[in-house]
Image 1 (cartoon, one colour):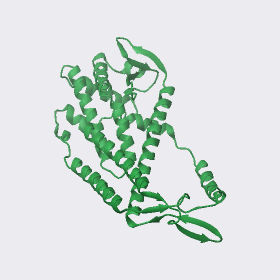
Image 2 (cartoon, rainbow, N blue to C red):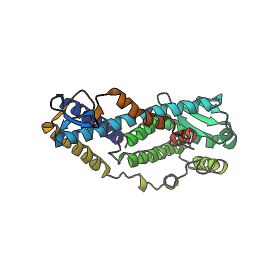
Image 3 (tube, one colour):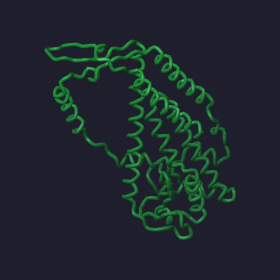
Image 4 (cartoon, rainbow, N blue to C red):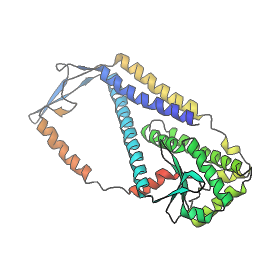
Length: 312
């Protein structure tokens, strides 16, 4: 599942970069071929494009938007994670488990966090709430996430699903992988309990009863899995051909348009006046509006970002 998501994400980002490179290669500087217009005594220029070039410009705009969103989403992931880590009160390592870090928190928490060097964290309340068998099951669950570097995989899924909006299949694919990752970690916890589902189930119920609503992440699929019903693990096979068809169509359109595209422009940007002061004066109100936008509640965003990497 993650291999398919990785392949689609990389292919989509390469297609976005290729669309931009194709437009740059098709654009020719020829001031005498550029269009000119005069409005109220001001001289403007805009490029001369045929229909194929217009299509390429639109594809390049989509590519630039996708790459910009990918960079912005990656930066936000890292920033929110670092803010989250700074707010945690580290107590020390768990006795007998040097790879597990104890944090000071009154809520029952157990999660795996970290992109390049993930770690397992549990709160003091978790140690007070769970029995030894239940704690071992929870730690086995989280260590499974750590071995597979699931926090990094979840972050990649969020970035590509936001950036590659022209591949809407990536979002349900990421949600499906998140569910399967939880089910796989549950299997690891059951194996660590000698095949018994009781310790993990009891831990999940303890988290649900002592924490905020849905803190334990108890879903119908996880309950069915603990009961031995595995039907929901089947993968929808139409996702792969549908996504490949979308990428192939995009590549074919880009290739066909690039063969006949013709674009000529002067050094002035499209619809930009040859008088720089006028352009700056036009952009200043837009910049002021952007700077005065209210800030979002980043605390909630951090919680949502790390929630998918939390297993209880």
